[in-house]
Length: 281
Image 1 (cartoon, rainbow, N blue to C red):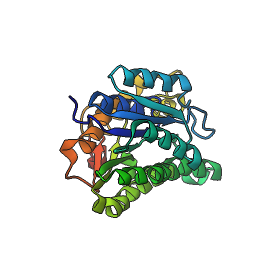
Image 2 (tube, helix red, strand yellow):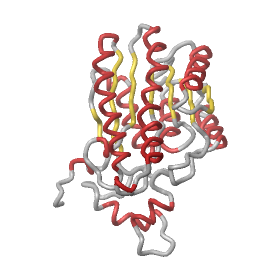
Image 3 (cartoon, rainbow, N blue to C red):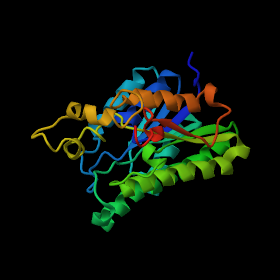
């Protein structure tokens, strides 16, 4: 038996990377999954988004854990599409207990005054408005169960400190942290816990893409992610350049599972110590 047997989790950005890791981890602990992903390009992202084939693979991996999954293509910026996906999942599984607002995009380095309004707006709309809409369509379902629940918003270490060169991204992730703190205060009376998780570098397409890799190693003609490891390692207290997505999924499970039943309102960094590193270190 798993520690989440009988529970249902809604996860955005579930087609690959961290979202897929969350889906598989929670399914392995007994939860049924409601999964959504955009599965379409984002013009200002600078790297490829997940596809419907990626989402289909997440479905297979969840089902391999012996759990059920309701998967839909939906844009977290689209209230109607998001509500339809959640409502369909709740109708299928009968309840909602856990929400992981994971969907978001990264940003390549660019000085703030060189950003276009379109770049700023699109990132904020996905990373902030999309997270809020995820909670908006989910909270009524959790409250209807009268069992309490757990919501985890995926922020970033850039939501805990100022990061030059990615001002719009850092601003969006600070907003996610503020949303988590405020929701924790709104929902505590209903025994609904709300926390934020703050990853550092995670080995997904968010860092393993040409603009990001070339930004770290402009000295190389055709750099790959492994070429960035010595530089990325220097950003951290622990001697590693990045973590795998399952490390973040383990932290999320800690918050949504029995071990986290007394925890709400916190920011949990899973960043190899980046957010605490002394500037001269």
